[in-house]
Each structure stands twice: as structure tokens, then as C-alpha cells.
Length: 300
Image (tube, rainbow, N blue to C red; front, side, top):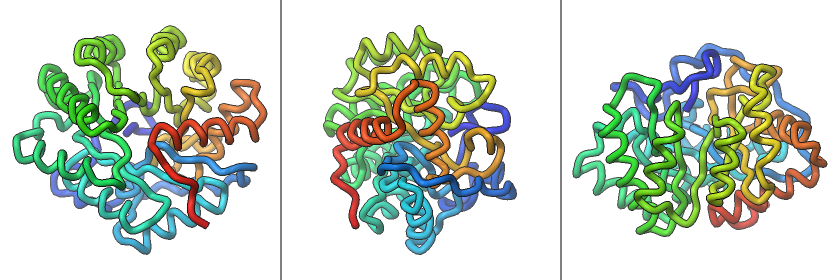
């Protein structure tokens, strides 16, 4: 998860903050205006509905309805602490087009004790959980020690391999170390770099390894030329897109409160960056994302 004002990762779920509470950094911001619907269905590959303020099944249904109205037909909501992990699995079980990913965020790696491992193994095995994440390394925030993060990342990689599910990576100021751990541990069959933040050289390394790169709102920012160049060279079969809501609202609504329904702004930005027909891009990223996560066609 990333703070859309500074463009830097922001640990979510402060101690004492219940799952389902709007993230305090964005709670008072105006919402992104609803975009023009897309010509075909897409999947929000990574969001945080609990931090968007969803608490119960009615909140989830309303958020999903807002997304579906503009073509965002399926959503993966992602945990980064234990309370959130329990919440996303429960939420995914209450809506047919909502799925979950569970892990401990690297800034919380020092909470990965034996009890957390046991519970995460149980939660990650749920059929509504389609990935182990977000896990990885965060060398920006002064949170968990780097060695502790690396150990937790390795454990999550092993869990993903044991379950046969993708690993969803958080990589903040740690590109070389993330790639090194993937090499040393042996990457799972499917690897997703959530909210990819690397340059074209990093994108080429990931593409050569067969890793999937998911782009969020920053790819649309006017000052993100390197990121746009990276997005332009990613093979279509490795391209995904996401909101990482409630943060990272895309241009021209940067700094507002994000939600899955805002994904079309980013999809259109990617189509323009890549010089790709919008219909074609929607179909391609949807096919790729469903294949990575093993999603069926959406309901209705």
C-alpha cells in the first residue's frame, strides 16, 4: 500500500485500528469521480477494501456494485496484517466476484510468530484466497529490520509454493534484494510485482524471468516517465493492473480517495502509454489476471 500524496509506501493497519476502518490518511479526502465505463470487463488485481472503509457485507456489495457499473467486474482485496487477513477472507466469502490475498506486509514482518504462521497457513488455504501477499521487502520505512523482512519474505514464498498459489510482492526501494531472494529461494510458478515501481531495466529483468507486473495509478502521473517507459515494454501476457485503493488515485485525481471503480482511469492511461487499442488491452489484462489467479468468469 502506498501513500498517494508522497508516492511512498505507507504501513497500514496501525495498532488498535480495526479491520474495516477507513485509513486515517485518506478518510477525509473526496472520492475520485466515477469514470466512463470501459468497453470490456477488467479485474482490480490488488485493493484494500477494509482500508477503503468497508466493514460488512453491505459495504462490500456497494463497493462491488460501484466497480461493476464501470466495468471492474472482479476484485482481489489484500491483507497486510492479521486482522486484515481474517477480514479479507470473510469478505471474499460473502461476494461471488471478490477474492482475497493474505500475508503480513514486510513492515509487519516482526509480528510473524508461530501463531501467525499457523493462522496464515490456514487462511491462505481457503479456496477464496488466490494469492499469498502482500509480502516482500520495504527499505523505505523504518519498520521491521531488513533481515527480519527477508526471513518473512522467504517464509511466504515457501507458503505460496506449498499451496500452489501466486506470491504477490511488495517492493519498496529494494529491487535488487527482492530479485536476489526470489533467485535464492526459488520463485513460485507465478510471481506478481504489485504496484510495480521499477525502471525499464527492472521491468526487463522481471519479464525475462516470467514475472507479472501490475501497474497502479502512478503509471498515469505526469512525472512518472520511467514508470511509463517500463509499462510500455512489458509483454501483454505479463501485464496486470490494480488500484491499491484507497491510495494511489490516478491522474487527474491524484490525492483523492481511491476505490476499485476508479481503475478505468489507469487502464486508459496504460492503453495510451502502450499505443494499444483499449478494447484489446481490456481483454488482454483480464485474460492474464484471471489466469494468474485462477478466476472464473464473473457472475451475472
